[in-house]
Image (cartoon, rainbow, N blue to C red; front, side):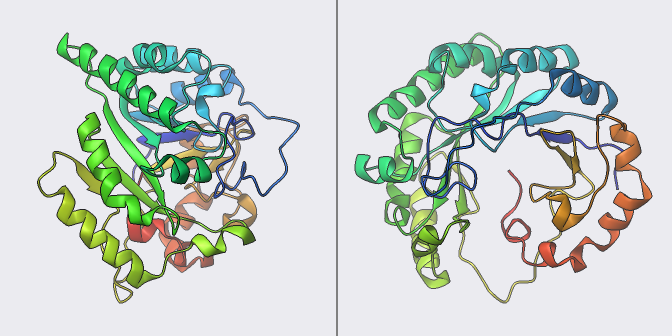
Length: 315
């Protein structure tokens, strides 16, 4: 086990998003809007940066739209100051500055920019990502990649661009076409996540193993002649034993309130309380008896036994 996490996810603004994607746990069209929005304290982020001596990469909030975080520019500045890469997931609307200006800011520190993408047909895309505009999203990707390539051509940082797909009944038939579209746009990777059912209305979107396997095989065949990487796109085998957790003992999560989390399912009521970064150091928590015991025994925890991430892999 490492003494410090190599990557930290900061849940900067979980309550703030400009879309209502139907499958989203926190912002779905099927739930009420959160009125009292929470934002992470910038001083806390700086504190954690300074304490995490092995830190190589950070992920801004994957709950909500991170580009709406009021301190995002300062977060980019911290990445420059501490020589840390940023791994960003965005819904692709590029709020506030637009895709071109955001690319100029993010690409120099970016390792991977995952843009949510959920269809090749306007109807499919906008039905899943409620509040989106397919044509605008498409132009945003083109603009972002254009700036990415210009920066790389000048000898600057090359930032990978990925499409992140939530695979479900509504869009699985378009998976092959999404891969072809991504390759044509200059996207480097397709990362697929199977839909998690947080709302009763989304149950119908859950895929049967046999149905997913059919489209996964089709997608793999399609990608053979394309210059694109596929992640989590492979047939499922129910007889395969769960893999070791890709996060435990390696990465860390910090909630908007400063709570330490061992993984992306870090509800302390489910996994336990490990400490708070407002009052404790990252090193102290990461090397505490409580956390070390969890690292040693997590495979027996009810939450970990059922976790899809042990079957699919990291972000």
